[in-house]
Image (cartoon, rainbow, N blue to C red; front, side):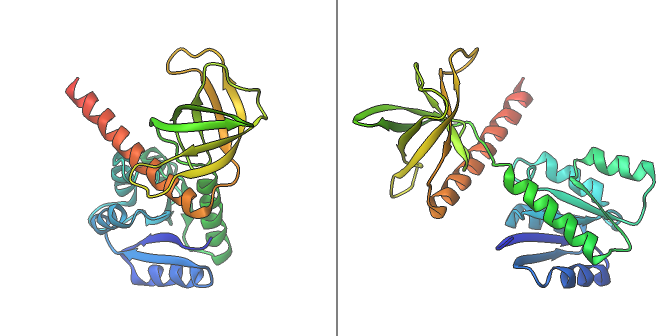
Length: 242
């Protein structure tokens, strides 16, 4: 869990201090906010890996903050745990409808608090951000090299256009460049699945990256985030125009 950014939001200093003390032994970068509006501004600025959000606050309640962040393409993928002492069906339904990932109940217990944080971060880490794109690339197998394009990229893999893709399980070489990057990225990939017939888009194969260096994996992740934000903004703009 190294270098994960956590945003703690509560209008009561006591609860903020308690949550910070529970997390002190782990390598988290901790940020705090004492109001809903401050939390929204900070979340948009730092893009945390997880937000722990008090349900009842003076200016905006936690479910309102959560709903606002889920409408923003920049913050809609951030997992949010709502912290509440109220367990009524009405309150929990309201929180669930706002798009939160789960709940932490007051009075806060250290073990259950840390377990909830770890579970959400692990789940979020497994769900690679995938974004529509179109990048030139070259695929190689033995002495053969083919120029083609990549689509729907994530830090875990991509879709590669190819009229006659190889069988699932095949190992290929892949080389491509992220726009603005100084160096090309080279990796072996394994074919996960093939698309011999698609209603939309090119024929091809879904591949998984096998040996991408961490610095390049971070570069791919940041590119996918940027592309996804742009795509969602375009979608929202198109819907408003229509």
